[in-house]
Length: 192
Image 1 (cartoon, rainbow, N blue to C red):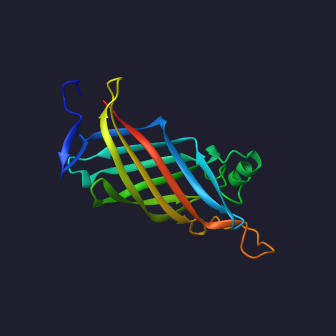
Image 2 (cartoon, helix red, strand yellow):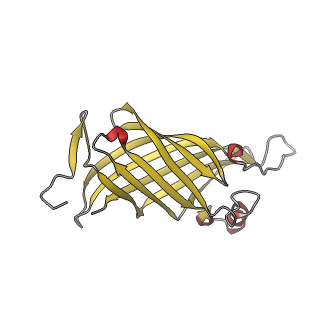
Image 3 (cartoon, rainbow, N blue to C red):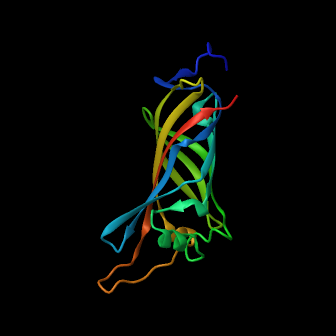
């Protein structure tokens, strides 16, 4: 796309990117999660190594996403916990080196909010997952790159993916909550 071509278009009152293939910008992304700890607090973490290809279709509702997350890149800022999360008791990063997501559809919600339907695979188990997506905007960077931003979130039950390790607490409840909130922030760059 030359510098005189438009990087945006109007779609149902929303300014969206032109059709094409976009890659998640590694320098402008966060693939994070939040888990309950001992039923009283939250632990936050992220996967440092994640990639995604986003195909924006002429009809934006036909757009698609594929993403790959490196399981060993998990980081909660606590080395012993991260090693445990990489172990067979949780992600088993050696046997299952990636977590995968593949969209299967898009639904419009309201304005710049959408639902991305898809399949998430963790530890060899695939489940349907709906991501609540907020389209953050589109433009051209000072370096001439066509970009757009987004955020997405969902909640999964980790036990649905075979991540069942836990410890019962004397006071009731368990060490690690079943529900995991996923929080994604990203910027995508158009490919030539």
